[in-house]
Picture 1 (cartoon, rainbow, N blue to C red):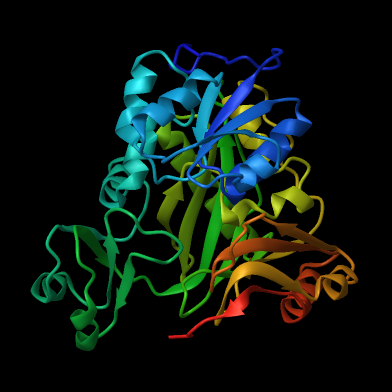
Picture 2 (cartoon, rainbow, N blue to C red; picture 1 turned 90 degrees about the horizontal axis):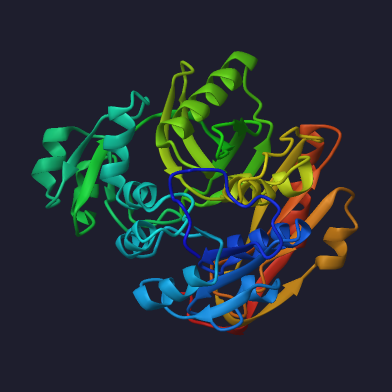
Length: 395
C-alpha cells in the first residue's frame, strides 16, 4: 500500500492494518504473536514453506528474501513493512520505498547495518564511541600487523551469530584470516558485554529496557546466558542507557533497535554492533516486562504509542540450541522436568529441522532475585535438551 515514507504518523488502530515482515523465522514468529494480541494481521515472506511466522498465524509468500518481485508482492499486501533479518535486498526495498511504500525501519538504515564497515563509520561520524578500526578490503597478514595485535577481523557483510568474525591474538592466528572485504578493529579487553534494547516511535519518543549482561560461548561466540537487569553499578547502567538512546536517535528511524556494547575494566562503554530489529538480547522482555520488544516494535512501526517498558521481575535467559552430533526432526527432552521449576517459560520456534547449535528456542526464568533466576536457568540448562532424530558425523 502506498503511503508517505517521511515518518508521518501511521495507521495506528485502523481496521485492516497489515504488517508485512521480511523473513519468517523465530523473530517473525514472535512479532506475529504480539501483533495478533493487538488485532493486527501479518503477512511474511520466507523461502521455507510453513515457516515459523506462518505457523503463528501470518499469511505467507514463499520466496527468496532477495527476490525483488516477491518483496513487491509482500509490500503490496502490507500497510507497513518491516524485517526480522538483515539478509535481504536493501536496494530493492529502497526502490519500493521511493515509490511511496511505508517501510520501517527505512532501507537506508538497513543498508548501513548490513555492511559492518559502513556501520562503524556511521557510529564514528555521529560521535558514538566504538573501538578503533580500519577498512581491510583485501585481508593480509601484513595489513593486520600494521594495524596492531591483538585485533578482530570482521567480514563487512554476512556475519551473524559469531560467524564472519576472527579474533587475532597472535601471529599464528594470521594464518586463518577470513577471505573477503573486511574491517579490522582493536581487540577490546572487556569486563562485560552489555546490551540495550530500545524503540523509537514515529513522534521521536525513545524508550529503552533495562541494561542486560550477556555471556557468550568461547567456541561459538553465541549467547549462552543473558541476565536482566545487568549487575553493574548504577552509574554504569545509566551511562549505558544514555549511550543506547543516543545510538538509536542517531539513526533517526522507527522501530526496535538493539545496541550491543563492551564495558571495559575501567567502566568505559564502546558500542560494538547495532541491529535495527528485535533481538536475542530482548527476548527476556516477553516474560519479564510490561511490554515485550515484539509488541513494542509493532506499536512503533504502526504509529501507535510506545508501551510501558518497566521490568516486573529479575530474569535470566538461555538459548535452546541443537545438540551436536544430531540432525533431523527435533526431539525435545526434559520439558516436564524443566517446567516443574518455578518461573520457567519455554519458547519453541517451530523449526522443523534441528541441526547442531541451531537456535531452536529459548528459556526465560523470572524470580524474586537475579541470583535465583540464574540458579534456576543453570538448572534448566542441565534438564532441557533438543536434538535431531538422527545421528550425524560430529566432524
